[in-house]
Image 1 (cartoon, helix red, strand yellow):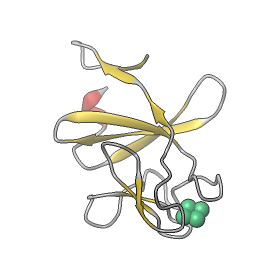
Image 2 (cartoon, protein in one colour):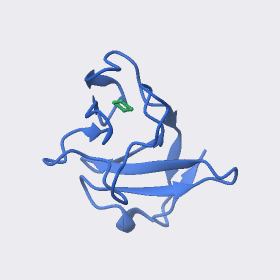
Image 3 (cartoon, protein in one colour):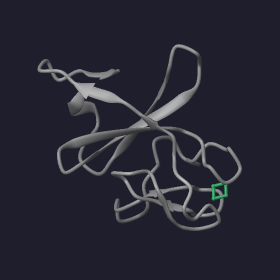
Image 4 (tube, protein in one colour):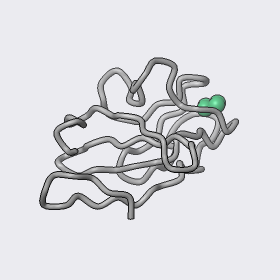
Length: 101
Ligand code: FES
């Protein structure tokens, strides 16, 4: 549900295959990505649901500090510069539910 993911926060989820992904909200829109850093294919967060940097401005990999644009998933700083997180398509329904497409 949208209220479970406040603006500039993120929450992780498991899909049916057991892979983890996360959803974050920015300016009222929701963005979802697989929880895999393109640098070493490791999970991004060290603490539960901590996918954003201190200012909540960028998605941050906790391993080597790569930063990713929230809206596009593109790495804008760090060892995987120019690579991108794998986006997941989600749709917000009128009941406030967020559904994988
Ligand atoms: S594993 Fe993410 S920046 Fe190195």
